[in-house]
Length: 471
Image 1 (spheres, rainbow, N blue to C red):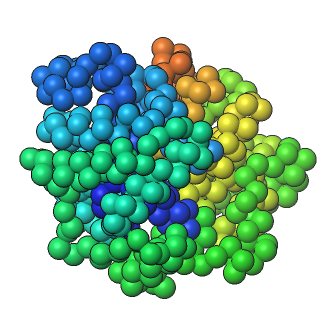
Image 2 (cartoon, rainbow, N blue to C red):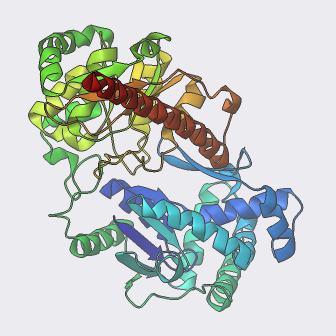
C-alpha cells in the first residue's frame, strides 16, 4: 500500500501538488482539508459556533459525511448536502482552522482518513498527515513557502475567481493561521522527522511535482512494485502498447460483439464440467429477472467460469481486476467477453459508468463483493465492500447472492447455491455511508442464508449416502 503524506502551512501549494501527483501516479487524492471545511460549513449553516466544542460534539450525534467521486472529482456530502461548491469561500479558511482545533473534530476526521488509507493507494495533504494522521506513511513531505509568496498566490487565485480581496488582509490571515496551526493543542503543524522538506517559494508546479515523484520512486521502488493504477506506476500511457490500452479503455460492448463469447461458451462448457464439476442448486433463481447483480464468494480464478457459463448464455459482464488486461491472451478474451476492468482501491469512475450502462440495459453483472479471493479456503467471507449495494440502490436493480460450498479444485465435485433474488428497495435514495453500510449488511444476511442453504444441501447428501451405505 502506498500512502503519500504532504504537510505544510496554508498556501504552500499542498493541494495542487497532491492532486497532480495523484493523477500522475494513478492513485486517489483524498482532500482532507475539504473534510474539515465541510464540517465547518455544516456547523455554520446550523448556527453552531465552530469553536464551541460541546455544541460541535452534539452536532456529531446526527452527522454523516459521505465522500464520493464524480468525474474523478471528490464531492463531500454532509447529511445529504453537497458542501463542495462552498468550501473555498474566503471566510471558510478561518472557520476550518477554528473547528479543526477541536479534539472531537480532529479524532472523527482522522478515523475516517485512516480507514480510507488502509485499503487505498492514496495521497493526503494537510497540517498533520505525516505526524498524526498517517505516522506510518511511507512517503512524507513538508511543503512550505514564505508568507508573502503564499498570500500572493491566494490573492491571484481569488481574483481569477472574480472575488475582491485585500492582499494585506490575506497576508495577515495567513500569518495568524500559521500561528494557530503550529500552537494548537491537538496535532500542531510541524515537520515530521522523516519528511522531505520542500520550499516551493521559487519553484514551478512542474518542478515540485517531479521532486515529489522522484522521492516516491526511491521510497517504494516503483520498478518492482506496480500498484493498481490505470497503467503501471511510473510508466506513461505512451509506453503502453496500443492494443493493451484499447483493451483497458473499452469498458462496455454492444450485444453484437459477443459472437466469440458464445462460441467459447459452447466450446469450453464441457471442459469446465469435467475439470471443475459443479452442481448448481436453485439455478432457476438466476432467471427470475432480466438484469441485475449476481454476487458470489470467490476462491479461485476458475470459479468465475461456473456462473458465467451457467447463467450468462448470450453475453457476459463481469468485473475483473484491470491487471489481467495486460496479458495479451487473458486480456484479449476478457475484452471480447465484455468484462469490465476495474482498478481496485481507486475511485474508478470509468468502471462505475460501465457498470451503470450494463445495468441500465438490463444485463447481468457478476461481482465479488469481498473485493478479493478467499485464499484461506474457509467458509467465512471477508468484510463486504459497499460497491454492490451502491450499484443496486442507484440503478434499482435486484440482487442474487451465490455461495460456493468450498474452494474450486480440479476434478472435485463442488456445489454452488443460488439464493432467492431480493432488492434493497428500502434504501432507494440513500446517499450516506451509513445507509450504504446498512444496505451491505442486508446483502451479508442473504449470503448467510445462502451459506446455510448450501451446507444443508450437502449435509442432506451425506445423510442419504450414509443411509444407503448402511443398507
